[in-house]
Image (cartoon, rainbow, N blue to C red; front, side, top):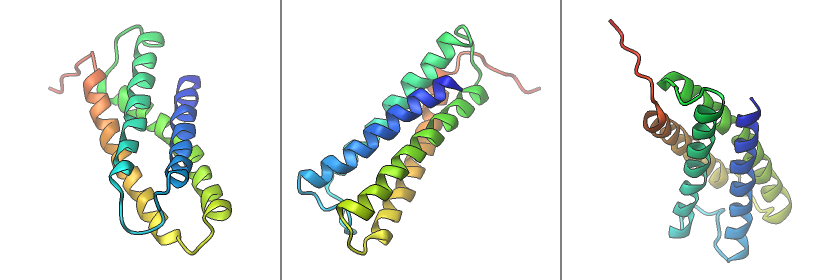
Length: 135
């Protein structure tokens, strides 16, 4: 659990920082238009998941990990990262850009959820070392 909290916090803090960086650089993230720079944020959970699951596999499981173990660990990491990033989003909506922008932000939040699930499957497939045969 310690591994998922650490890497979840890393993903959440970096995602929250990215939200504020996008605001400070002048990109309006509250409209329906998506700037090309926003797509760079896909890299944050991908790298965090990869190193988090790899650390879990090499440290706690001694190099042997099945797909389901990797997927569960990925979802734990994403859960903690989502909580922190969601908190940063609420702070952003309430204090930084306080216009009526909940609909645009919730659409981006759903997109981030979808991207996170796809990345969790990809990282789990990539880092699985033990195959389980179903006969």
